[in-house]
Image 1 (spheres, one colour):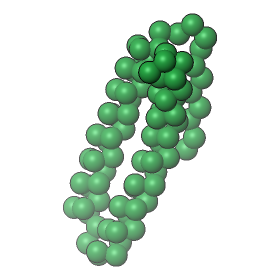
Image 2: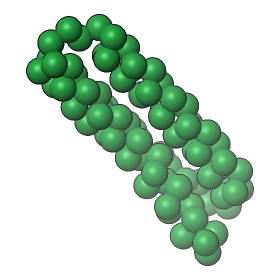
Image 3: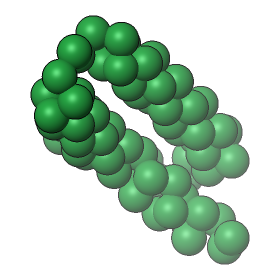
Image 4: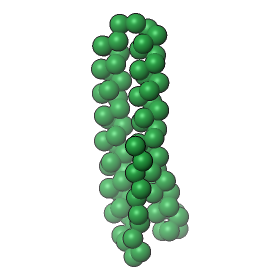
Length: 79
């Protein structure tokens, strides 16, 4: 899953960084819930490890566009 976030010219960068940070917090919370579910549901240690790795990969992929957008916005705002 790839998300592209366009940063409009003249945007309120601080507000947008705040909203993107909230989204990242929600993604992180959802990820922790999924990890907890995986720990409870996977009986096999091998299967559990594979599931955790898959969840971690998907989580990194989902976060990447938001992290990149925040870095761009901070660069535009000078910090």
